[in-house]
Image 1 (tube, helix red, strand yellow):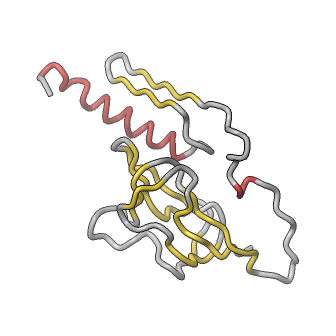
Image 2 (cartoon, rainbow, N blue to C red):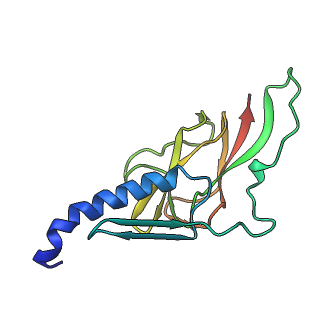
Length: 152
């Protein structure tokens, strides 16, 4: 990196961090993400989803019986294409393990995409039945990372 790029380095880091936060809060990743540091530019573009690619948990579910506590299995899915990590940093304990109880919004992993760390969050209350992807394993968009026994 040349000396001329140094003033933009912190701006680029700030833009990257903001983009990671933005990506973690959208329902599906954009088809295009463009970042620039000089005269800060962020561009996100979504193509319409292809037929049959809607996420399964977005489909309406039947109302559970009030006496029933477990609702059934569900998947925690990858928010984007990237590398899945179980822990916040190498050597740290994983966010969750099999048997862990999770709450909606709780971070259960990280997907690294384009040097951005995107949190993976549980969408439902439940118990982790299985971690389906290994630490450091490549994952695809909407691929199942964990299975949950959903509870009401």
